[in-house]
Length: 173
Ligand SMILES: [Fe+2]
Ligand SMILES: [Fe+2]
Image 1: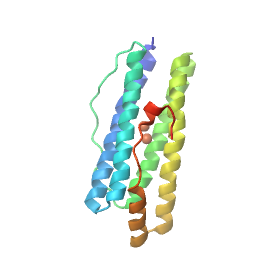
Image 2 (image 1 turned 60 degrees about the vertical axis):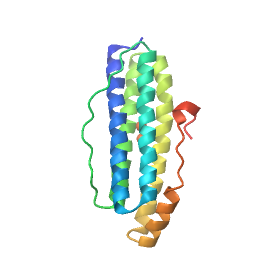
Image 3 (image 1 turned 120 degrees about the horizontal axis):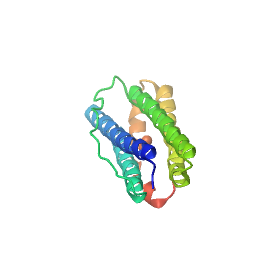
């Protein structure tokens, strides 16, 4: 059985993962509007991934005998000044998510809830990957600056990303 505190914190995280999903869907729409279908596709996969994260937490609360909550989702931004700006915001956002997951893990340790610690390990590993993936794109965008051809090439590259529901495969790859 989950403690009331962990139930609340995980329910809040469900909401935060859905908020993340909406943020990335909004970024995807923004890239489509700019005529960058590869960037839009990459963000759409990001949206799909965040939805699976929310559902992983949702199912976990239920599995542990808690009550999963579907809370209202706050509005997300809809416009950005530059392609780099979108990815810098993504980086900041993922760092915030990492801090939240670490906080959840601290709570699970404090409450001596080993099952929750074990479940969170998947998210801890996932965040390492999330931050590394985004950092690679931020670095490339900083390198190429406003070079149109480079942005065009990167758009083609990002179009090749394939969605894998890693909450089902058990690995974070
Ligand atoms: Fe996530
Ligand atoms: Fe994420």
